[in-house]
Each structure stands twice: as structure tokens, then as C-alpha cells.
Amino acid sequence: MKARIFRHALLFSLSLILTGVFSEVAARPGMRFKANKVIRKTAVVIHAAHKQLKLNKHFTGNFARAVAHQRFAKRQYLRGNFRSAIHHSRRARMLALTVIRDNKGTTQKDWEPSQEENIAAGKDNPTDAELDAELMKDNPNLKFSDEELVDAALDDIDVDDIVNDK
Image (tube, rainbow, N blue to C red; front, side):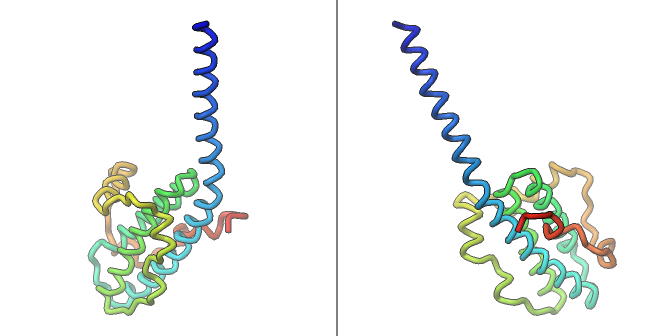
């Protein structure tokens, strides 16, 4: 009798676990698309910030932080951590917008995070400090020097080179 109850409990637990796993797998394609869209939009803003930084050369380190968060977002995306990719890419975009403003540029309204992006990011968004700490944990020797990036090509901040991912 006890063995039968144990077997049923085990089967029930296993079915719950498998249901959770399969629902997570099923949710991923939508999150993958949303993360792709966020990263691509942020890449546009970072390129605009790069141009503005080249013009006015007001170096604060925020541009280097934006690029670092965007590169981290792309790595998270490639690992399948789509929610983390969205968070880091949004952080990168906000830093890039600050760079544009600090360098006497104007921003476009559609560069701000949209309602759809805010929903995709989730309710429990990490703080900027938490995102910065996660970035530094991944790469503790990271230095934020705008001067080093002002003449860089920045061809590694977008996901457009990933095939069949749009």
C-alpha cells in the first residue's frame, strides 16, 4: 500500500515538474522574439550615442557602460536567458540616451522603452545597481573608458548577425 502511494506521489511530482519544464520551453519563443527586438532597438540608440560622443567628446564612462551592458545582453540572449538579456539591453539603452543628452544631442521618442518592452521585462525588474553588479560579477576586470570606444567599430552589439532569429 505504501509503495503504491509513494509511486503515485512520485508520478504526480514528476508530471508537475515536466509540465513546468515544457511550459517554460513553450514560453521561450515569444521571449526570444521580444529580447531580439529590444537588443536591436538598443543597438540603434547606442550607434546614435556613439556618433554624438564622437562629435562632442563629453566622456563620462556611461557610453562604455552602455556597450558593456549591451554586449552582456547579447551573451545572455545567446545563452537563452532572454529576460536577463532584455533587462541588460534596456539598461544599456538608458545609459546611451544619457550619453546623447550629455553630448548635446536630441533623442527620439521611440527610443524610450515601450510599454511592450516594460511588460516583457516583467514585474520584478532588477535595479540599475543589481544589473551593474551582475555585469561586474561576470567580468570583474571591466573598465569603463569612453575614450577607448570612441573610434571602435561596435559591430558586436546587435543580434542581426544571428541567422533565423528575427
